Amino acid sequence: LKQSPLQTRLGEPLAAAVEGFRTVEACRRLSELEASMSPLDVEALLEELGISKADTERIRRMGSRYEEFAKQYVSIGPGWQIAECNKALGMEFGFDVSGGLLKLTYRVDFRGIADVPAAVARATAGLAELDLHRHFRSEVDTTTPICTGAAANECLWRERTHGKNLAGRGEAMVACEVTDALDEAEACIFINVRAQDAGLAEGSKFLPLDRITMTTFRVSPLKDCENNGYRIVCCQSVRPPVELYRFLESLPTNSLAAAIRGQVNELVPRLRTFLHDMPVLESRMRDGPRSDMYTRIKELG
Image 1 (spheres, helix red, strand yellow):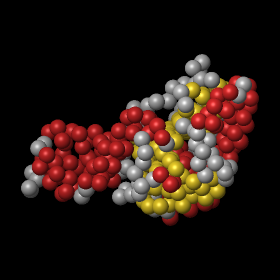
Image 2 (cartoon, rainbow, N blue to C red):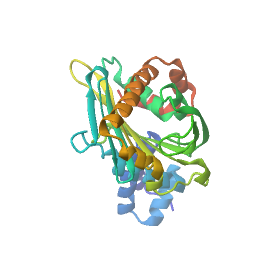
Image 3 (tube, rainbow, N blue to C red):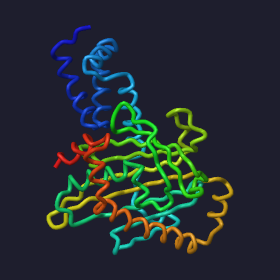
Image 4 (cartoon, helix red, strand yellow):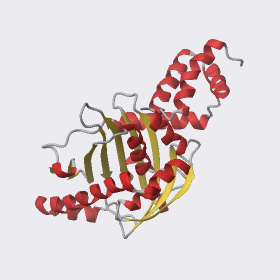
């Protein structure tokens, strides 16, 4: 079916959103097209725009995850088993053991940044390039890419850690998705990371959400008159083996708090050094398979 000029113009914002990795907007534009055109017309228009069925599946999947998880962050407070603030590190964190899950959230502000868009792009690359996590996550041994999806903002990795992590895994299959949502209400880059036992993975298919480790990062510009910068919010949910969960549940709160405080207080300075001082990060942004995505984020400012 040949598309009318009007139909083609209606599809152009969708194509631009896909090209710019603005998956939330792309999902919204796709829904608008489907509501205003017949299925055959939509199919023909998507083909004309070079948007495949795999692309539309990815757009819907990532858009759905954004709606479900990007807005879930709630200020750490009385509802958390452990809730602390470290002003020296510009950080607050919370930890909770309940309902068979371990939940960890931390928020870190990076201030005094001259070029905020470039810093946001660096932070995005530092969190999305999973093989570089070894520079700030002490438990990581090696991470290797298995495949990059049809788009640069989706990749599958295999991660090996020293011994077993909180989920009881020594080796995991990890999927990472990046969404530019700087124009959305949350004004952030949203990074969704899902891990499961490598032995249980079938290709790139993942188990139900209650069987995996879910980690989300939100990287948000902070712009004010005196002290520009950006913020990273990390939310992690882990369902550990029953024995480990029962052990953690039985620990006195002060002992658990000391252990978590030590881990977070070690991680944040390492993360800060990695994001701001590591040459390998700059070279990956320039020469890696996701260089176009990082360049686009830089140019947003």
